[in-house]
Image (cartoon, rainbow, N blue to C red):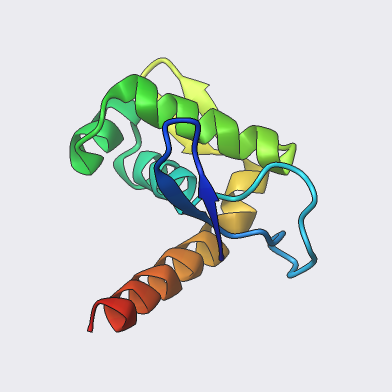
Length: 112
């Protein structure tokens, strides 16, 4: 994990790794992007994911699009009734869940 300062002066966490463990030289992987992606997959809808995550629908959409740009792959298929993961999206589901699980574990250790 790396810490970066945003344009508004706030710090944010991001993991500078590809899913295969290699070093990442492009845009950083942000755990909020993974949360948005997994929320949309689990809820089957970006709108329902936004409600679950207590953010706006455009925020979830922007986070998912940022993740897709970062990875260079479409992760969700947008359908009239919601969303479903693409083949690429399905291939990263378990790793994304593990990253968030580990991130939460690190936060709990840091807060102790």
